Image (cartoon, rainbow, N blue to C red; front, side):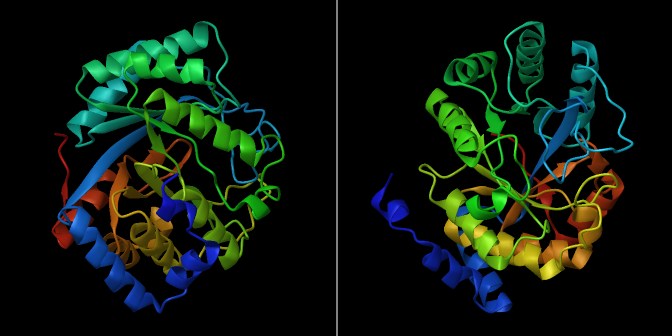
Length: 318
């Protein structure tokens, strides 16, 4: 770990996070413009390739087998269906295609072989590829890399201290071990968290601290707002205030200047003005499409309208 990241303390993160909001946004905007083209937003699409019946007990997730939600379980999609959805995403302006499976971990066998084929076929379409399949070891990470996977998503979700209130079926250290396997394989890391689960500001600072002191820092950091789903333990959790999302994005940008900061779940509740502040503060990536795995996302025409209002355009791959 570099000296600067090793010495980064929670107090350092807290000092940034606690700045008056407009001062923080102004600082983040300056950092953003030093490292990124502020006119461009990276656009991804996310598809659930295997839905529901997950053995994890994540309190926020409707796909958990522990929760009584109305989610319809679906087996692993066929290669043809995934490729067709990838083609549609590319036609709609996405340059990265993300595939998510409701697994606790990657298990060797036919299903994993099918996912490897999906990755290589989607990659051949000229799209960047990303997957989130749960925990995996170094050999599995290497096989995904060899198939053409560019990014692996594995979120920390929250601070180490609050984590046990949300998940009991997988430890924080297991999440860090998966991230280490991904990094050691040479793939890029996509890793972020969720706000609005009942955590405190100190937990949000703790999450940002854990993300920022990874060395190297994640190439992609999704900032999610909880989408409360009936039947999950967090179903009655009130929506997070818009300023929390802006503060999270701005602090992430200051701490991780070169990282792509993705404004992810919860945009439907955030509203256009708050999203605009997030873009100003350094968010430079969104998911296109009306669904994020199993939760709502803005309609494509709404995103097109918002980006046009703000003078933003999808970033095209090099």
